[in-house]
Image (cartoon, rainbow over all chains, first blue to last red; front, side, top):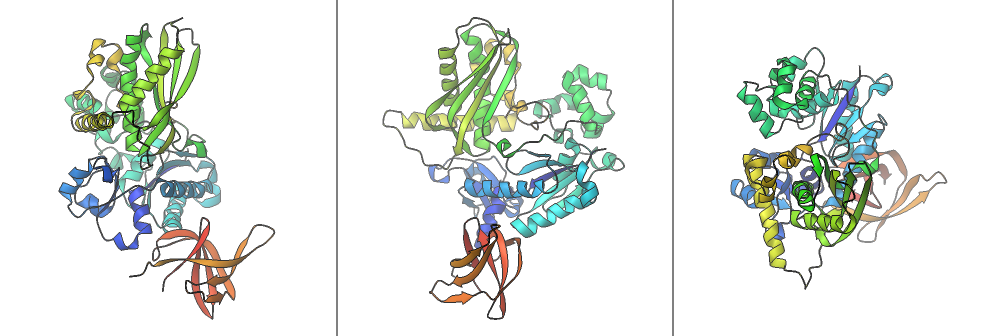
Length: 415
Length: 79
């Protein structure tokens, strides 16, 4: 039996800001994208802002409508990185098996250290208290015997709390949760499940796995296992480098790609997904890398620098396609294709605008990206798509947003 | 209101193992304060000044005070 902790720093960016600005602690505070340019999204908010209905990911103007007194701060990424590092350093005191998930979350496998420090709950309590005393921010910690339940547990009580999911209480704690709380269950899966009266995690757990398989494919089996706490994926031993250094998506395509048009169909959703995740984490990238594997399993990677840092899906797509066209001679059809944003810098970094580029057009594209993302957030990923996606239904079955929610450990590097 | 966080100049001793021990704090107005004893060293946050660092609990003129080492500089909490 393993003992896995999942530690989640509560309202991470906002908490770090509030710690450093005692005078704003009793106000509704959010950290948002580029407020000076009048666009950008809420990256994090404190409890007060949350109580007013401010949501992570929404546009700054939406947040201001709900909460006119909202104080929106520009992100200070170097400060957040420092706190993220301090958190990890503390986790490493309890185990060498620490798998960061973004800047503010991590799994810690403490199976081997329970003899030294006491049980999982005791270690979790110690971490919770130490983070508060030593770093001045709060974490909620989940304790369970697998990663999935540990993550669910850390969401149950927050801020500054520990939740223990055991073999004797998981049916009480986990099963009543909505199915969508489970990793891997996105909006479309939720809809599919609901049609058959499967609404909670308990419903998934007690459903016939054969039925889930018919409904969802192999995901059905995986979900059935997750819901029953039968997840055996290991906590990956990831070092410093695992904290977001690049963001990428790749896919093995449903059929081999045989022409440039096929690659474009695959490249768009990948680029959109990368762009949206860059924005979500408050980054822009200075370079793009593509990876290509053909049907003889020969593979290569190529990268290039961007003229200027960007998080636009168009820029990512354009560079990726240029790289591809310059480097592939179609000796064989392609089996797998990936796009990755590299050399990330904070989106608050000052940018040298170019005289030879249409700045207005660039800003338009940015607004377009945000609008598309907003629509997708509200109505599901497939509610708005590029026309090119409709040209080939086999290829376009890909829903890249669903690629992004898995912990790194389950499906090897999507990020 | 003045900023509750005051970065200060510090004269310190570094031992051969790399241990860092502050000896004297030089305040904004130039007055210097001799640290007679360090009673505790640990990582801690300062809610009052806003920040985190290695906290030195120091005795200065028979009064205890906290001095924080934040990455590469020292701060104290304004009384």
